[in-house]
Image 1 (cartoon, rainbow, N blue to C red):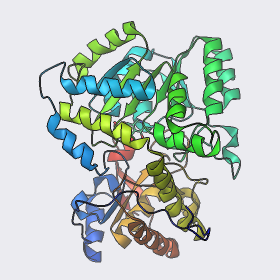
Image 2: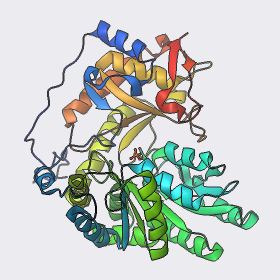
Image 3: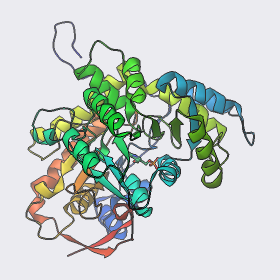
Image 4: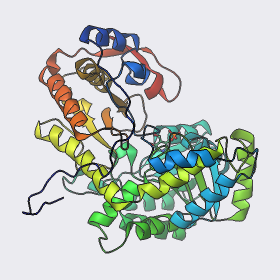
Length: 448
Ligand SMILES: Cc1ncc(COP(=O)(O)O)c(C=O)c1O
């Protein structure tokens, strides 16, 4: 953003704050006790003990005044409630999809979809599967394969969420029967939240048509993805038109409304065929709830419909992407190994690179624990040995929507920098408890 003399200035929040929530910083010695009790896993820290929470952008957003007021219009009837019809109208307008099923959250949608689409010993090929997506595929005796673009190594290539088209074609050629479908995650959370280009999506569609495979979008962060395309690939096209085209290139989509739906819960599945919709409806009835609400109160459907409308606002998206960049640049300037260029919802620190002196392990959890102790800041840990996705262990600083100002982020930067200064003193961790699946979230550690 530039001012009257052309100087670049920091874009301020395009909203003003109407309701506040008190947060406070526990004393240093208390924070040490808390992290130990949480088994050095930030997911297990009680949120009341957190000062600034960058664990996730999922379900952590602040609601707008319009969202809060529409809550009162929820029609809490058992089925076929008013909010459902409002939601399907909105989803149709934004995505172009006719058939829409709400679910309680993203993994509920994944459960139902994977039940229908994944075959035992099959393959699902992807630009990057989120942990729950991979788990749902593996639970059904199939394999999920990530095919990141080779351009991931180019310093300035922005669309590092792309899938490798060459590898995709090779797999489809060599094992056409085994591949159940292609899943593209927008933006690519397991590759630094970086976007997928429209060029890549169009090519995926061509390849899918050639091999007659369905394309499924995990569109949980579709709007952030669309903004990158708008800004860097197709500036002449509106965000709405880009969103429409992205969705049109798929056969099925699902999205966790906790991200770009600007809601605290919920998900949506969209399909184009009536037959598929009917099959999915009966599964929804089984696992989630009546297919007109998927286990959500009607007021939440209204909230999601409003959230989807609010997220595709160009001004908000510009602020959002710049806020992530602001945090990322401050850490990069300090020489901290962050994934670059930055993605749409978070800054990722490569903990394996940062703590390269670690012999065995868990540098992400060890570093995240120290960041909590230093500044009361909670950050997430993904990838690494516990995830099975083949990426290094990352510390993810995800920014909740409309919750923190840039001065909160400066506090975070200071805390991270102070931990980096004393990185040689950080103690390694060993696993003390490891659940059989989705280990990232529930594993516990002890210091060695
Ligand atoms: C890309 C992606 N897909 C799916 C999910 C699962 O969604 P939910 O948390 O609503 O179950 C997540 C959650 O973080 C995600 O980031």
